[in-house]
Each structure stands twice: as structure tokens, then as C-alpha cells.
Amino acid sequence: MKKIIPIEEGDYYLTPEGYRCFTEQYHLKRGYCCESGCRHCPYGYNKATNSINKK
Image (tube, rainbow, N blue to C red; front, side, top):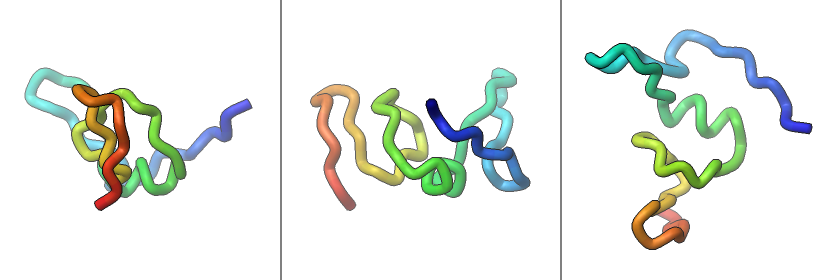
């Protein structure tokens, strides 16, 4: 079962389209890569190559 991470200020922002975009801060708190190609992925996941490139 996945751990629920409480949302805090700075964890996301709203895009012009009205979607929540999670920040690097949130992804680091979560502690793993979901492999969804997130815009601010700190783990370096590349959806096109399906690989993680550490920064």
C-alpha cells in the first residue's frame, strides 16, 4: 500500500489549463519515480526511452 503524502505549499501549481502540476519538491517527498513522464521529475525519467538518467 502506498503512503499518503500530505500536500503542502509549494508541492504543486495550477497550469493555465487548470491542471495540478507537481513540483520537484513534491516528487522528492514522495521518494520514488512513477514513470509517468512528469514535467518536474527529479529522477531523470525519460518517457520516450523508458529509462531513468540520474542527474
